[in-house]
Image 1: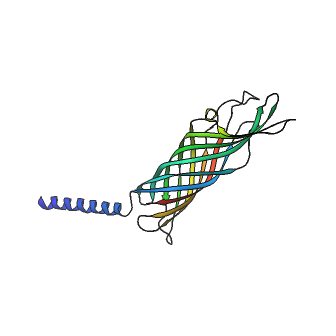
Image 2: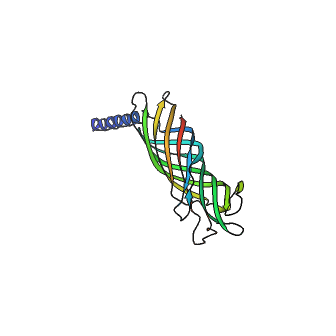
Length: 230
Protein backbone atom coordinates (compact mmCIF):
# COMPACT_ATOMS: atom_id res chain seq x y z
CA UNK A 1 0.00 0.00 0.00
CA UNK A 2 2.82 2.35 0.91
CA UNK A 3 4.60 1.49 -2.34
CA UNK A 4 1.43 2.27 -4.33
CA UNK A 5 0.96 5.60 -2.55
CA UNK A 6 4.61 6.52 -3.09
CA UNK A 7 4.25 5.67 -6.78
CA UNK A 8 1.18 7.91 -7.15
CA UNK A 9 2.95 10.76 -5.37
CA UNK A 10 5.98 10.33 -7.63
CA UNK A 11 3.80 10.42 -10.74
CA UNK A 12 2.03 13.58 -9.52
CA UNK A 13 5.36 15.19 -8.68
CA UNK A 14 6.76 14.41 -12.11
CA UNK A 15 3.60 15.70 -13.81
CA UNK A 16 3.71 18.92 -11.79
CA UNK A 17 7.42 19.33 -12.54
CA UNK A 18 6.78 18.87 -16.26
CA UNK A 19 3.91 21.37 -16.20
CA UNK A 20 6.01 23.90 -14.31
CA UNK A 21 8.91 23.46 -16.71
CA UNK A 22 6.63 24.01 -19.70
CA UNK A 23 5.19 27.14 -18.10
CA UNK A 24 8.67 28.43 -17.28
CA UNK A 25 9.72 28.32 -20.94
CA UNK A 26 7.80 31.49 -21.77
CA UNK A 27 6.50 34.59 -20.02
CA UNK A 28 2.83 34.53 -19.19
CA UNK A 29 2.46 38.33 -19.43
CA UNK A 30 4.22 40.88 -21.64
CA UNK A 31 3.79 44.66 -21.37
CA UNK A 32 4.85 47.39 -23.76
CA UNK A 33 4.40 50.78 -25.35
CA UNK A 34 3.53 51.36 -28.99
CA UNK A 35 3.37 54.24 -31.49
CA UNK A 36 1.70 53.94 -34.89
CA UNK A 37 1.75 56.47 -37.73
CA UNK A 38 -0.56 55.70 -40.63
CA UNK A 39 -3.14 56.88 -43.12
CA UNK A 40 -6.90 57.16 -42.61
CA UNK A 41 -10.03 57.69 -44.64
CA UNK A 42 -13.79 57.84 -44.21
CA UNK A 43 -16.09 55.66 -46.29
CA UNK A 44 -19.82 56.12 -46.75
CA UNK A 45 -22.59 54.18 -48.47
CA UNK A 46 -24.98 57.12 -48.65
CA UNK A 47 -25.98 58.62 -51.99
CA UNK A 48 -23.75 61.60 -53.00
CA UNK A 49 -21.40 61.06 -50.03
CA UNK A 50 -17.89 60.69 -51.44
CA UNK A 51 -14.53 59.81 -49.92
CA UNK A 52 -11.97 62.54 -50.62
CA UNK A 53 -8.70 60.65 -50.42
CA UNK A 54 -6.55 59.66 -47.45
CA UNK A 55 -5.03 61.82 -44.71
CA UNK A 56 -2.30 61.15 -42.10
CA UNK A 57 -3.33 59.66 -38.75
CA UNK A 58 -1.60 58.48 -35.60
CA UNK A 59 -2.09 56.22 -32.58
CA UNK A 60 -0.19 55.51 -29.38
CA UNK A 61 -0.79 53.54 -26.22
CA UNK A 62 0.03 50.58 -24.01
CA UNK A 63 -0.06 46.91 -24.99
CA UNK A 64 -0.64 43.90 -22.72
CA UNK A 65 -0.29 40.30 -23.91
CA UNK A 66 -1.54 37.35 -21.85
CA UNK A 67 0.03 34.11 -23.10
CA UNK A 68 -2.00 30.93 -22.68
CA UNK A 69 0.56 28.93 -24.71
CA UNK A 70 4.08 29.68 -25.88
CA UNK A 71 3.04 31.06 -29.28
CA UNK A 72 -0.53 32.18 -28.54
CA UNK A 73 -1.71 35.22 -26.61
CA UNK A 74 -4.72 37.37 -25.87
CA UNK A 75 -3.63 40.94 -26.62
CA UNK A 76 -5.33 44.05 -25.23
CA UNK A 77 -4.43 47.38 -23.63
CA UNK A 78 -5.53 50.86 -24.60
CA UNK A 79 -4.73 53.20 -27.45
CA UNK A 80 -5.37 56.86 -28.21
CA UNK A 81 -6.32 56.81 -31.90
CA UNK A 82 -6.45 59.98 -33.98
CA UNK A 83 -8.83 58.93 -36.74
CA UNK A 84 -8.81 61.34 -39.65
CA UNK A 85 -10.72 61.35 -42.91
CA UNK A 86 -12.40 63.49 -45.52
CA UNK A 87 -15.91 63.42 -47.02
CA UNK A 88 -17.86 65.60 -49.43
CA UNK A 89 -21.65 65.78 -49.65
CA UNK A 90 -24.49 68.19 -50.56
CA UNK A 91 -25.45 70.82 -48.01
CA UNK A 92 -27.77 73.81 -47.90
CA UNK A 93 -26.17 77.23 -47.91
CA UNK A 94 -27.88 80.52 -47.07
CA UNK A 95 -30.06 80.35 -50.18
CA UNK A 96 -29.01 77.44 -52.41
CA UNK A 97 -27.58 73.97 -52.08
CA UNK A 98 -23.84 73.56 -52.38
CA UNK A 99 -21.08 71.04 -51.81
CA UNK A 100 -19.46 70.66 -48.40
CA UNK A 101 -16.00 69.11 -48.21
CA UNK A 102 -15.30 68.28 -44.57
CA UNK A 103 -12.07 67.03 -43.01
CA UNK A 104 -12.67 65.11 -39.78
CA UNK A 105 -10.35 64.66 -36.80
CA UNK A 106 -11.61 62.18 -34.21
CA UNK A 107 -9.74 61.37 -31.01
CA UNK A 108 -10.83 57.93 -29.78
CA UNK A 109 -9.84 55.84 -26.76
CA UNK A 110 -9.78 52.31 -28.14
CA UNK A 111 -9.52 49.02 -26.23
CA UNK A 112 -8.69 46.12 -28.56
CA UNK A 113 -9.34 42.43 -27.95
CA UNK A 114 -7.06 40.38 -30.21
CA UNK A 115 -5.81 36.84 -30.61
CA UNK A 116 -2.09 36.91 -31.46
CA UNK A 117 -0.29 33.91 -33.00
CA UNK A 118 3.51 33.73 -33.33
CA UNK A 119 5.94 31.41 -35.05
CA UNK A 120 8.95 29.85 -33.39
CA UNK A 121 12.19 31.79 -33.78
CA UNK A 122 13.49 31.80 -37.38
CA UNK A 123 16.99 33.26 -37.88
CA UNK A 124 16.60 35.39 -34.79
CA UNK A 125 13.10 36.66 -35.66
CA UNK A 126 9.55 35.62 -34.79
CA UNK A 127 6.66 36.38 -37.15
CA UNK A 128 3.09 36.90 -36.00
CA UNK A 129 -0.45 37.50 -37.11
CA UNK A 130 -3.33 38.90 -35.09
CA UNK A 131 -7.05 39.42 -35.47
CA UNK A 132 -9.83 40.73 -33.26
CA UNK A 133 -12.15 43.57 -32.42
CA UNK A 134 -11.65 47.17 -31.35
CA UNK A 135 -14.11 49.08 -29.18
CA UNK A 136 -13.66 52.83 -28.94
CA UNK A 137 -15.06 55.83 -27.07
CA UNK A 138 -14.91 59.21 -28.78
CA UNK A 139 -13.04 61.77 -26.67
CA UNK A 140 -13.46 64.71 -29.02
CA UNK A 141 -14.09 65.44 -32.67
CA UNK A 142 -13.22 68.39 -34.90
CA UNK A 143 -13.95 69.37 -38.47
CA UNK A 144 -12.61 71.79 -41.07
CA UNK A 145 -15.09 72.80 -43.78
CA UNK A 146 -14.85 74.06 -47.33
CA UNK A 147 -18.27 75.00 -48.74
CA UNK A 148 -18.78 75.66 -52.45
CA UNK A 149 -22.00 77.29 -53.65
CA UNK A 150 -22.72 78.17 -57.28
CA UNK A 151 -21.95 81.80 -58.09
CA UNK A 152 -20.33 82.54 -54.72
CA UNK A 153 -16.75 82.44 -53.44
CA UNK A 154 -15.55 79.38 -51.58
CA UNK A 155 -16.17 79.51 -47.84
CA UNK A 156 -13.65 77.96 -45.45
CA UNK A 157 -14.19 77.28 -41.76
CA UNK A 158 -11.18 76.29 -39.64
CA UNK A 159 -11.16 73.28 -37.31
CA UNK A 160 -13.78 73.44 -34.55
CA UNK A 161 -15.42 71.00 -32.14
CA UNK A 162 -18.35 68.99 -33.55
CA UNK A 163 -18.98 66.54 -30.70
CA UNK A 164 -22.74 67.02 -31.04
CA UNK A 165 -22.49 65.73 -34.63
CA UNK A 166 -20.55 62.53 -33.90
CA UNK A 167 -21.43 59.35 -32.05
CA UNK A 168 -19.86 58.38 -28.73
CA UNK A 169 -19.00 54.75 -29.50
CA UNK A 170 -17.16 53.06 -32.35
CA UNK A 171 -16.45 49.44 -33.24
CA UNK A 172 -14.04 47.92 -35.73
CA UNK A 173 -12.31 44.78 -36.97
CA UNK A 174 -8.51 44.74 -36.55
CA UNK A 175 -6.25 42.55 -38.67
CA UNK A 176 -2.47 42.71 -38.54
CA UNK A 177 0.84 40.96 -39.12
CA UNK A 178 4.44 41.68 -38.27
CA UNK A 179 7.79 40.62 -36.93
CA UNK A 180 9.37 40.49 -33.48
CA UNK A 181 13.09 40.91 -32.79
CA UNK A 182 14.11 39.81 -29.28
CA UNK A 183 16.98 41.76 -27.70
CA UNK A 184 17.14 39.29 -24.82
CA UNK A 185 14.83 37.02 -22.83
CA UNK A 186 12.73 39.92 -21.54
CA UNK A 187 12.79 42.71 -24.15
CA UNK A 188 11.85 42.75 -27.84
CA UNK A 189 11.19 45.20 -30.66
CA UNK A 190 7.92 44.58 -32.51
CA UNK A 191 6.98 46.05 -35.89
CA UNK A 192 3.78 45.36 -37.78
CA UNK A 193 1.09 46.61 -40.13
CA UNK A 194 -2.51 46.80 -38.89
CA UNK A 195 -5.72 47.37 -40.84
CA UNK A 196 -8.42 48.91 -38.66
CA UNK A 197 -11.69 48.38 -40.53
CA UNK A 198 -14.56 50.31 -38.95
CA UNK A 199 -18.07 48.95 -39.24
CA UNK A 200 -20.10 51.53 -37.30
CA UNK A 201 -21.24 54.96 -38.43
CA UNK A 202 -19.62 57.72 -36.36
CA UNK A 203 -21.74 60.62 -37.67
CA UNK A 204 -25.12 61.89 -36.45
CA UNK A 205 -27.86 64.03 -37.97
CA UNK A 206 -29.64 64.29 -41.32
CA UNK A 207 -28.57 65.83 -44.58
CA UNK A 208 -29.91 69.39 -44.95
CA UNK A 209 -30.58 68.97 -48.69
CA UNK A 210 -32.32 65.59 -48.40
CA UNK A 211 -33.65 64.95 -44.89
CA UNK A 212 -34.34 61.32 -45.75
CA UNK A 213 -30.57 60.76 -45.80
CA UNK A 214 -28.69 60.30 -42.55
CA UNK A 215 -25.12 61.55 -42.32
CA UNK A 216 -22.93 58.48 -42.70
CA UNK A 217 -19.19 58.06 -42.30
CA UNK A 218 -17.09 55.07 -41.21
CA UNK A 219 -13.40 55.67 -40.36
CA UNK A 220 -10.76 53.23 -41.56
CA UNK A 221 -6.99 53.25 -41.22
CA UNK A 222 -3.79 51.41 -42.06
CA UNK A 223 -0.97 51.91 -39.58
CA UNK A 224 2.67 50.98 -39.08
CA UNK A 225 2.90 49.94 -35.44
CA UNK A 226 6.24 50.02 -33.60
CA UNK A 227 6.36 48.67 -30.03
CA UNK A 228 8.84 47.87 -27.31
CA UNK A 229 7.72 44.88 -25.24
CA UNK A 230 9.04 43.93 -21.80
